[in-house]
Length: 113
Length: 109
Image (tube, rainbow over all chains, first blue to last red; front, top):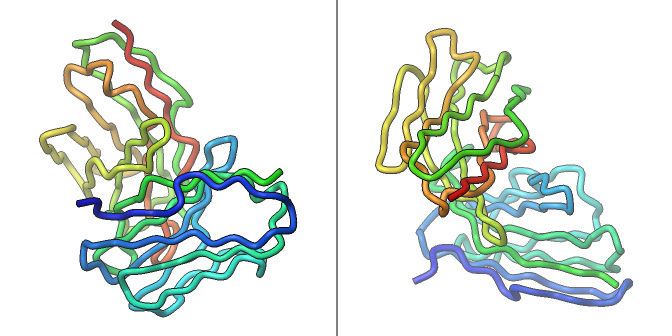
């Protein structure tokens, strides 16, 4: 069983479209995260949720809206996609807030044309 | 916020021991040092974590001197499958991990 799973694995779309990426973890963790890894391979945190509550919201455009229906799921919705949104998006989870031991999903490769 | 500095890349050969050193001069008293490994097209994977002295697990060892301003990840007898990017992290604030550029390790036959 995959601990942290993301769908879809690949996403190719046009500028201006709205898309969602889903994340699920079956580890029983309380905290989930979204990271963005750009073409230069820098990995930056975007959001963090603890028990469905938003804990961290980095300087991310409000076109990005995370949604946590329950503590096992953290979805990422992106409105009005732009070329610069092309990146790999990773979901992660950890057993506790501030956890340095995070478990990452396989990533969603988003390409905006 | 504590920052980390590590070599951009390293090369090694199969069977050798690889040591990757990371500097974190501004590490806070309660910060742990954590190392992650990332293979191409995969998410980062936790390798090891320590606070001081030495920590060893089935994958690697982590050496941390008394001043904790640096740490060294030691990979014994590397194989081709250890080719990856290795990230050294200290906490970048509450609930936040700050990933640097990492060290690209290439293991050659």
